[in-house]
Amino acid sequence: MAIVGAGPGAPDLLTIRAHQRIREAQALVWADSLVSPAIAALAPADCVRISTRSLTLEAVMQVMLQQARADKRVVRLHDGDPCLYGALHEQICRLAEACVDVEVVPGVSAYQATAAALGQALTIPGTVQTVVLTRASGRTGTPEREALRRIAALQASLCLYLSAHHIEAVQEELLLHYPPETPVAIAFRISWPDERLLITTLAAMAATTTEQKLTRTTLYLVSPALAASPTCCSRLYAPSHTHLFRGGHNQATS
Image (cartoon, rainbow, N blue to C red; front, side, top):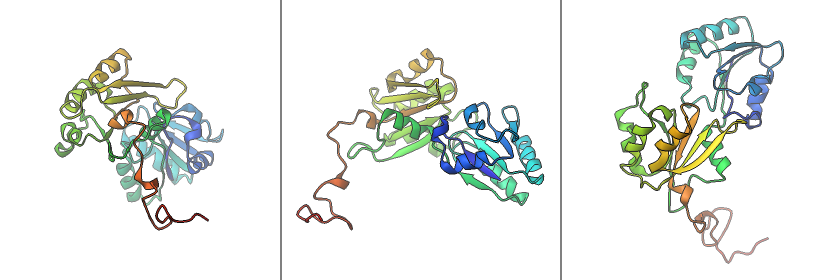
């Protein structure tokens, strides 16, 4: 069995391994409310396709185990990367209890696709060197040590998932530490045909979300990197920076 990351939406952002596993699938258990139909369409015509949009985790596991016990090549298809907000831990544990071998295939995450669409680095020398992936507390909750007001103190490149429903509270907590003019990229269904990619400020983040009627499949990228000066350069390539494969600036080139 393979648990496969479908990436943010565009079929050509699948990894080669993910593409192969989907093309070989005999049973596709997929989050059809989140994964592009174009990706599910890569599975063979005779592949059994099972939607999980209305199923509990226990029901999903029952379906997966039924197909595996029928000697089917089962692919559990997740949006983005399975290790992020995809109940991967629970699935792996239950499959292990059932003695089912599992391969996990990573996928491109929405924050990566958003940064790429912007043509923007999330780590800028002298500006920001840390990227944080998190979410609003919501119904699932987060540990107190990971409260947004604590994370905001880092002023890192902050990638917020699953937060559109709580955006007013999110904005209020982030403003405790980030300046109001901090740039924010709002990415709705990034890499899908109907994607929307908006640039605003932290002070206007909630209002923009409301105006655009965004409620789900929305990522927020809050980062001082989005306003970095063109003169900011990595020291890795500076002539004075030596390492194993490059000496000082006086070293002759071959």
